Image 1 (cartoon, rainbow, N blue to C red):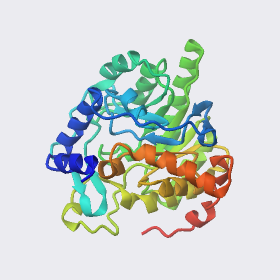
Image 2: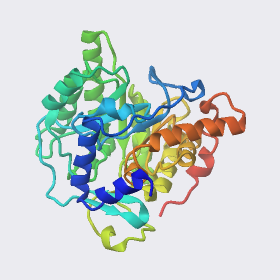
Image 3: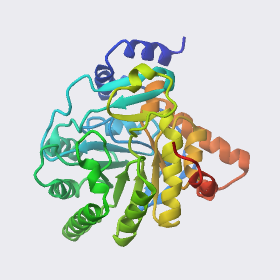
Image 4: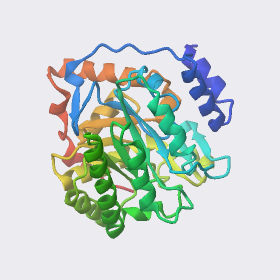
Length: 361
């Protein structure tokens, strides 16, 4: 039996949150081998002024407290994202709050932005030696009196360290958070966040790109509203998407009843269709990071064909192992070899019409 299968079998004997802690500890202590990937210039992507060595990133939610970004980058990822971080530490929702749906290669979580707060993450990021791209995902405390102020606080706290920001208003596990996707609320949020970014840029002589992370459960009208506000503000890009509340097509009916957001392979279809619909709405210029169900080079490539400039994964690594990013990057290079193409960018949007027309259940 391959070593990862043995490791996964051992980890799957633990509660999912305990297993997550063990994996963080293993990365922290150098117990997970680094992955060497030959540098392929065809996979380099320039987005929002940043040069990504490859388009595959680790999504927020794994390294919540910025404990292991350097170790993650050594797994072959082109970038990684820490958080979601809130101004004050918070415990999140009661346990158990992570559930594996093994038959579906999926995860349901209702963590609720559990994290150690801005200060702890700031000091860890300050100590990093890496020159790699580490983004900071910011959110609001559950009991906040002013959620917009919490996001502004995140911008101001991490402007000197973040390579990019993700404004996360799409988690389903903080009551009322997704209300910030409504047009009037979103306009107020983006105005405040981008003003803070610009003030910090003037102070630091360094402007940090800001991405907005949205849900995959939006109505057509909701997508229209978000697209309108995104185009009305100097935002640097979108991340599509967070976890879904949908349970369509799941085989593990026992775990499917758990509350929370669903991620992993079953999210691929919905998130990719929403990605393409947002690409059609915002046009070709604004960058999009595609997230949801990326489990192989084929699914990563399909996100790009649907309109993504970069992709992120997380839950599929639970089932495929820490070598997944390297496998995907090598697979993308092999596909470019097969097609005789000199740049991955050539394939972006090649299936956007097909995916935008996909039916959502």
